[in-house]
Length: 628
Ligand SMILES: [Ca+2]
Ligand SMILES: [Ca+2]
Ligand SMILES: [Ca+2]
Ligand SMILES: [Ca+2]
Image (cartoon, rainbow, N blue to C red; front, side):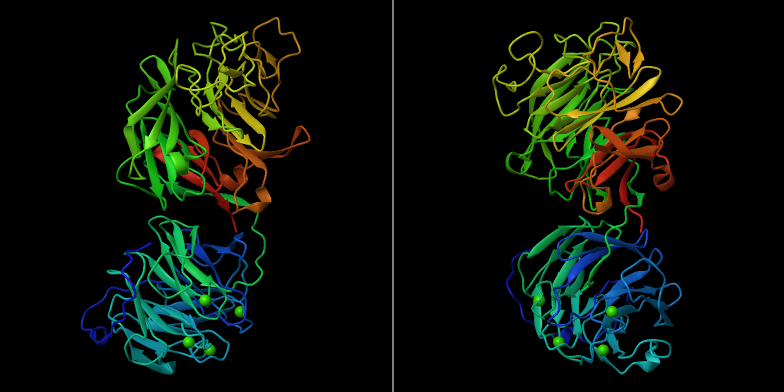
């Protein structure tokens, strides 16, 4: 979290006087914790959408819509019932907007408040159990304490008293740091990370000071452990992470949570019982101007997002901001359907730092292992270990997907080699690696010192290539593993696009290409009962190329648990269904909620199971988010 410099206690005489002009400091603050109630939790407010994402005690999320972009958000107990609810300060018109429930809606209380640049400071500064809105005027480094809410009470004329503390530029926050049920104020100096806490609302020096966090972190306080004393939380916009600490001292955070991004602000408080997250969804733009993004992924529980660019780079988004240097810069042969096409992190990536890529180079498709370097944001380019190389007879239909199954084996998607119609009849030929999903054991060196063959691979002991796992695929651009099932989206020739769901333990499954294009006979005679027909099929009246997605297992939209999303590259619609009893239920077009995404190249998952969408147009990455 921060340099471990030990507790530092300083007098603040030097901080008391301000002679400097100041730039208004926008800050989010939280309301007083009321001792003896439940521990406080945290949340973030997305300042591009006005969506409040609040966590309950078990980490479940709730989404609320309140306010406009750029409003300054905070939480407080305006009606004295012990529950903290949203408030906003709109700097454009100087109004405060307060709401008394943690649900989507409009303000219950509105009043004019302060002047542009003032920082709203909610808290219970007189210990009567009710939060009011005081303010901090950065230009004066002066706190104005106001112990009653509302019209005529919000303005400075109604201030009960004021006092000086800190220097212009310090970021203020309220809290009950000594557990006496009266909120006082704290400051954090962004330049050096010093925190200054005061236990009385009077001019004077800090009672407690220490270093915590990095420059740019946004402070807020709360009673994270329920002991009646507020301590510091920090939100780091640069990586979208909340750091909560249970003591007001230097050291590492007691609780770290990935939530929000560079345009989010933190809030904290006792939110009471929260409504379940909505199952209505939307798309939020995460990043743009990437270079032909066609996949995103992340190691489990990692806050970062790794974006695969067709042109050969793997970029890292941290807090939705692209890091200056790519994770890996690979020389590939592009473009069209070639380039860097797939990425999968080893299931034990946190321990071994290994990951796998699928790319084209010359006339080859190559699947290689790399390792991270000593810098977690940079791979070691010299660590490449080539696992599999396949000669491609044509430039199209290269597949590209990589994913680990539930047994820890690497699945590799390969197209039929291209040329149109599978002219070499490769897809159903078990001796040819093209038109297949391969399955290998990257933890073994049985084959040429490079990898092993799982015992249940269908041709391990003859009859075909040992690496082959499933056959009859035309171009399985994207597939997903979920709880023992495999969702395979196989791109069609001229007429039919298809999604097939089958057990991930189905060695030798033949999905029918090029005998069948979906359920349409392609290469007669179309006979035999060994072909697996798709679960979902659509014609080229509805699209041109299926883009397979993922089953939702995240925590932001729990009503969608188990829902599989997929879309179409050309038409840009996104649909979803749940796989139940061998069939697709709740199969719906999501365009009404999500719109369409032109050049929809892929879906992806972050380290927490949230779903993303990539678009080649504008180099964009979107996230599927709750729509409050
Ligand atoms: Ca309340
Ligand atoms: Ca009060
Ligand atoms: Ca106190
Ligand atoms: Ca506490």
